[in-house]
Image (cartoon, helix red, strand yellow):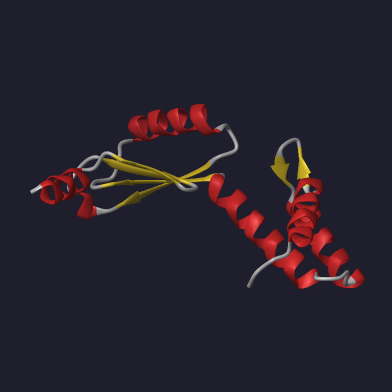
Length: 130
């Protein structure tokens, strides 16, 4: 669905009003949605749709997923977590997953950023070069 510029602007203003010290406040988002639903301004469905997308993108930006072929030792997990927090800030939630398909190495995904240092990615790149 195409969203008007006015609805996009209203959603961005609503999103900014839900932030406290640069972090999204869940209770403020709930209150803002309830207020919009109660008032039902023009194009309120578009505003809520855009607000939903902004909240979803913010959540993805604050979540890191680290995949490895084998379980990482605690000291390596701590080192990786510290490096991610150094780049993206202390508010990032980090989840460590095991993915045997990687063969070796790590794949880190934070929001739309993907850092793939796995052997599987290198093999795929080598296969594409032939």
